[in-house]
Length: 158
Image 1 (tube, helix red, strand yellow):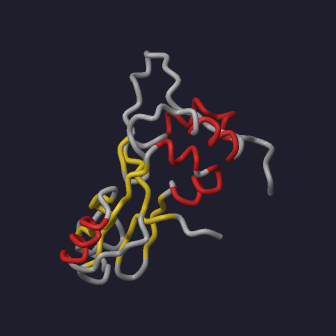
Image 2 (tube, rainbow, N blue to C red):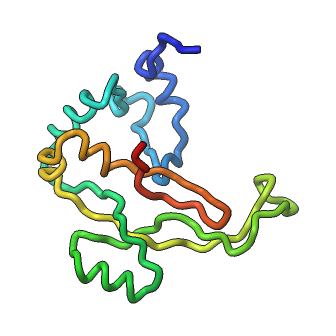
């Protein structure tokens, strides 16, 4: 069933419902009594890219890389070869199969170790020059999981 409602119609409720931990990061909205417009929705990709392309050229975008270092020496080689890459925490590798544990917060639990991956710094000017399709292909991350890990990586193209 398709609805005619749009997310932007419920922006006030959305602001109130967003969790503190969101998409691998933290949201720290302004206090409720401060009337600051801090959350935006866009009806389509073109509207979002129009806003993004007008952002200041200070700072940088952090995008996922295709490289998957398997050892510290590979990580060092990737970082030495390209100064725009940064090491980052990109998920967890399971140290065991998930199983039921007494007093765990979820039905299944397992111990896991951090996974170190790579992100690439991208200049905002490059984002503007890259055009809309390039921005949406590069700039978004997704959480994926399998039997052995939970990872934050680039969104797969359809």
